[in-house]
Image (tube, rainbow, N blue to C red):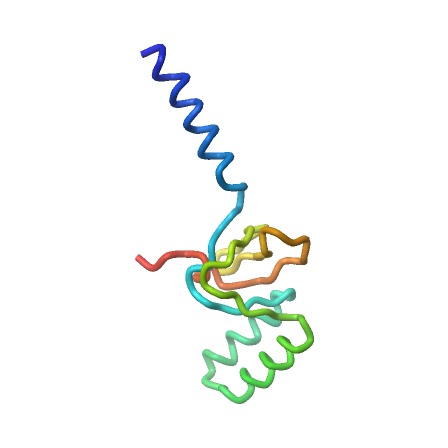
Length: 109
């Protein structure tokens, strides 16, 4: 028993060091925007069925750098979250985070 405790502590430390706190992997391609309001507006356009408005706003936001597309497998850090969005940034950069639906990093059940 006294050997089990140090072994468990070492295992816990190793597991915590293997991945930084907040480290995630993109599992579903999504877009994210620096402004949570722009992300919300884009999803409202989708929900309203306004494909033209969605396409125009997304193209303009991607071109300006306000938004970006996430690719499956990208390593990101989760800086903060709400009930449905997380602010994600690439783990190897100091860029501002992008508000992205949490479905981008959550595996489907």
